[in-house]
Amino acid sequence: NVGLSGQFVALELIGRGSFGSVWKVERKTDGKWFVRKEVSYMKMNSKEISQVIAEFRILSELSHPNIVKYLHHEHISENKTVNLYMEYCDGGDLSKLIRTHRRSKEYISEEKIWSIFTQVLLALYRCHYGTDFKTSKEFESLNSANRRTARSPSWVDSTRVIIHRDIKPDNIFLMSNSNLVKLGDFGLAKMLDQENDFAKTYVGTPYYMSPEVLMDKPYSPLCDIWSLGCVMYELCALRPPFQATTHLQLQQKIQEGTFPPLPDVFSARLRSLINACITIDLNQRPSTHELLQESCFNVYIKEVN
Ligand code: ADP
Ligand code: MG
Image (cartoon, rainbow, N blue to C red):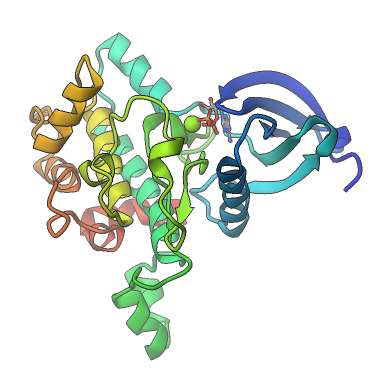
């Protein structure tokens, strides 16, 4: 593993994470661009270090067109740093898209919103069920045993379930020369079977955090659905569903679960699916599996594959 970093040239600092910097780098052999996330574990406690290791493990297991591709990592012991190399997404993130539209006072097209909704759902399906979503056509070609699990996938007792836990506009990336959308930043992600250390690691304003996570209650992959609902809401309304001037006020609003109606320039179908995601009652909140059964996603699933 000697000199992995020697194979890349740093081009530009593109972000600062809580434990290090994110660089755009160029691979010398072919000039291709990648992202190098430099994580310094100098100031981390053992829990935080194990979270970083978990992120690597999770990322290396996930291979999906709608998830930022992880390449490899290297350990630089003299700097107490781990470098994580991954795919570079050159189209910016959703927070930038929202900002641009808010400035120009122009709604994002419904087409584009459906396309983004579908692709993030496909990424989350892969995380939540440990397998790829099957379209009805793919379903037809499965044998009966595989059909049974595809029809009613279960996340109970599965050691492969991954909860992202930080679905927000800044963690969803775009590509400039295609409609591809990719989910990234698995820094807070966890496997379902690990203990809950969420409260200690979360920093930032929890606009997109589900009420059960806010309340430190046990949670399931459905917390990602709530957050996705909030992101889709913001793509439509160009403002998040819950806004407040203080942390406490925000928390209260999320726990009440009421928010202004979505602009009626968007279809009733889209509005009702987004509203369903932002439902406090976990029995009413749809899973990725249930959502993707909706026929309105079909055309966009075909577009991706
Ligand atoms: P953190 O949220 O912990 O700071 P992120 O992984 O979200 O770490 O990276 C920080 C910033 O770096 C992002 O907001 C984004 O601007 C940029 N970035 C991260 N990953 C990528 C990527 N794969 N492609 C392009 N830009 C990225
Ligand atoms: Mg981030």
